[in-house]
Image 1 (cartoon, rainbow, N blue to C red):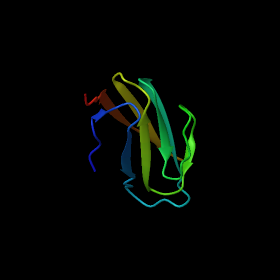
Image 2 (spheres, rainbow, N blue to C red):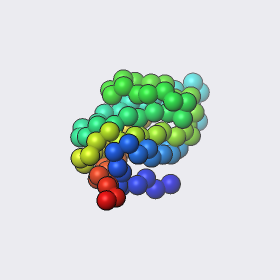
Image 3 (cartoon, one colour):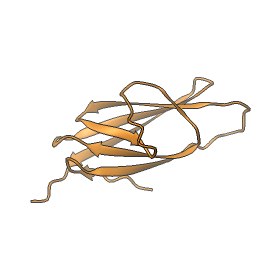
Length: 102
C-alpha cells in the first residue's frame, strides 16, 4: 500500500509491512529499529508501543503496521531497519514534505 509523501504536523499515517522470506528457516527471529535523520515525529506499533530511535525491538509477525505521527512543520524522513537473526538488514526510507491546508 502506498505511503503518503505529504504530512502535516499532528497528522498520523499508516505504514504497512510484509517481510518476504526466500526460505523458511527454523527459529528465525526478526527485529526492527528506526532512525529519524530529519524532522521530528513519533513511530508506534498498532499496539501503541512507541519506538525510541535506534533501539532494537523484536517483531512477533512478518506482517505488521506502523503509525507515524509528525511533530514537525519541516521536511522529515525516517529510516526503518528490519533485521533477522542471521545478521541480514534491509533499510526502507520514507520522506515527507510538510502539507498545510490554509
